[in-house]
Image 1 (cartoon, rainbow, N blue to C red):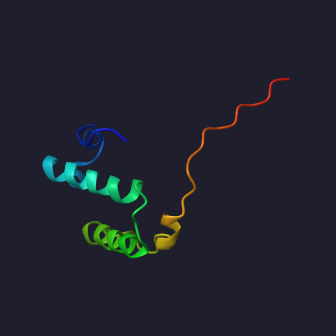
Image 2 (image 1 turned 180 degrees about the horizontal axis):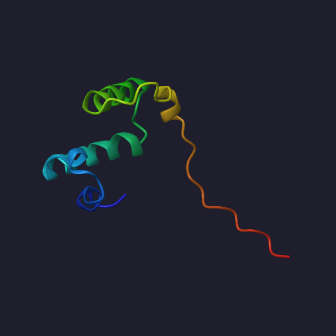
Length: 83
């Protein structure tokens, strides 16, 4: 969440690239991932793009794409009962 400029301030320059390009990528990612419109093939493509720019260490394997699609919503912690 937050503005792309604020997010970019916390990320390495190599990740951000051009500010106008980064803002577009952030908005596209929000539409895809936060609106629930992502398919397993899109996740596979995203992983390939990431690996092409920054290869993973030998032996590191990302989880299966389906694992990215079925993340339960975050819920606030349940308050502890008071005695």
